[in-house]
Amino acid sequence: MTLAYWCVLIAALLPLGCAAYAKKTARFNFARDNGSPREFLARLEGRAARAHAAQQNGHEAFAPFAAAVVIAHATGNAAQGTINCLAVLFVLLRLAFIYCYLNDRPSLRSAAWSGAMLCTVLLFVAAV
Image (tube, rainbow, N blue to C red; front, side):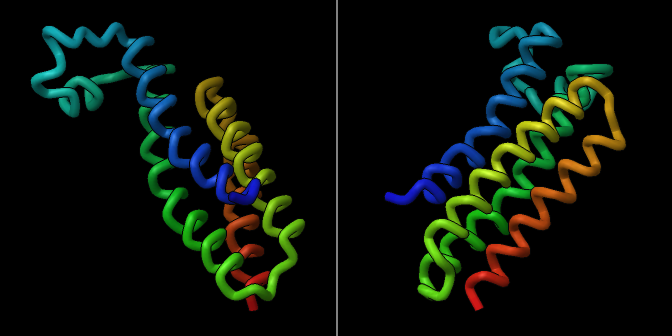
């Protein structure tokens, strides 16, 4: 298994970490709130709401990234080092994105999002 494939697993788990953080920050009570967790999450404010938004964006960013990694491997046209580098950079930028989201830094958050999206695009380009 390549480093890039491990990055796909990490990218899949990042939104779950955001969700756990949102629930912990907002004092989610499994006995009381688990019957309608989406309603609970919809009422969040502040840092917990930003963590939930980071979770949602993580789910949105995951599919294109995972597809790009698999396609870059499958075509055989991209060097493994290039695939690994772009995949690691994607994960690091997504971590920066989450940090910026939680700390209400919208300009830096947008830059991190753009960088991660560029990594995804470059993985597709490397596969050509």
